[in-house]
Amino acid sequence: MTAIKDMVEYIAQSLADKPEAVRVSESVGDTVIMIELNVASEDMGRLIGRKGRTINAIRSLARILAAKMEMKVTVEIN
Image 1: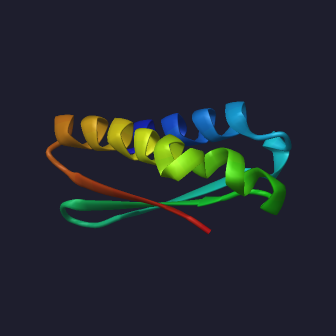
Image 2: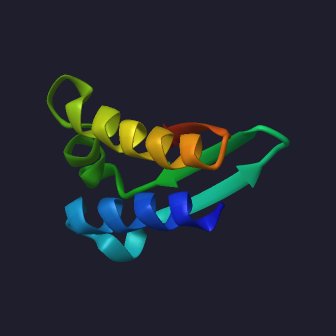
Image 3: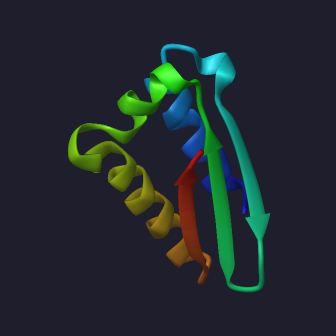
């Protein structure tokens, strides 16, 4: 399960101006993984991207990893 969390954390830290402010938490259920991403307020726009393209790409990558584990994943930004 941590592979998805590690991947999301790596991408978020790479995109953020303040990588030390990136916090990723993971909640694992029977068939669902919930990833919560907390970033500095000034990095929020950079992580979401234009029209949400960046966060949607992160979600797509997370879904691919989760599908290999026969799980579903949700990625949320707080």
